[in-house]
Image (cartoon, rainbow, N blue to C red; front, side, top):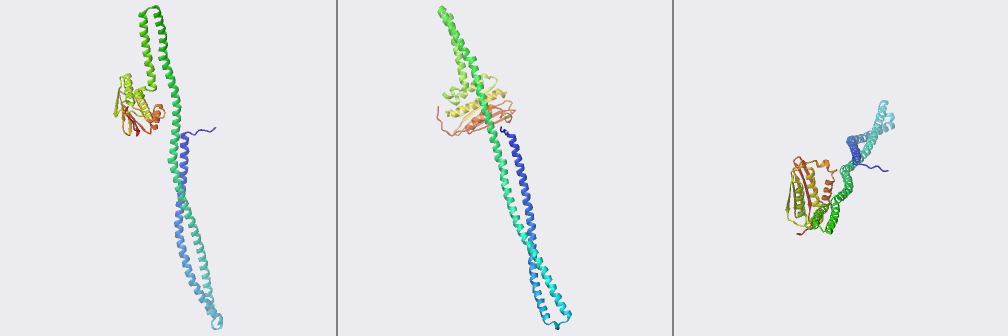
Length: 383
């Protein structure tokens, strides 16, 4: 069974990789620097060696001429041996031998210098190759480091986003189940109970009518009418919570006005104000539904958690952008500390991203402001 790698483990792996690559880059840099220093030293030595070789060649050529001259002298002395004294003959032999010895030593030194020169040239070629490889490797490692720093960061962000979306999906399923339970409970405790009572009252009406007691019959009919009206109200309220029919019939602005007014009537201690800007125009359904839900979630958050005394809801329908601002004077909160755990905020962010918009939340002890802007280039007509 494969083990799942969490985000922290992946971060640790990437950090280890980055550390190893950076160490390798430092080692390659040191190798390159050592190669450059050795290259500079060998260049100086090569130049000196070449000068010595040239000097030995010149001296050798001169010495060869002297040896030839002494050999000729020795040849003359050898032919006319009887004409020279023993001291003169010995001097010619000694000088000739000395010259030949010096020439041999000089040529041997020249040979050693030539060999060293060739070795230096080969070594310099190898060092040049080492320096080029070190520079190439350093360049490639820089690319790898950039990939590790930037691209792996993006991978981490993608993984985090995928994980968040997975959690969001699970929360959607959980929320759906909770919503079904809530609707089921509301229907059971509200309209279902009222309909059962209406059924019983209708039987009472029938008996009263058969007994001829018209006053009691009329009283029961009025009671049934009140119960039907109350049941109808409850059904309409449940339908409105699921999806306001006014949104389809009237459009976004009238629906939000009505919604804000309804919330304000239930929370008289909070002054809730709706301020529309721009023209009152119909939008495509996906925009109207998304913006209504965004305003609904923002307003409910402010009412439930902000402990505010004043809330302003602003909506501007512009030519190229739709802008929503929900601000309050409440106690504020830290958006970063709860954004990953808040189903509502995750849902808001998902809706905004679907419309390619931007969501920002700023909060302090003086209040909270939710700012939403959505690009809008599709033409729309008056309702």
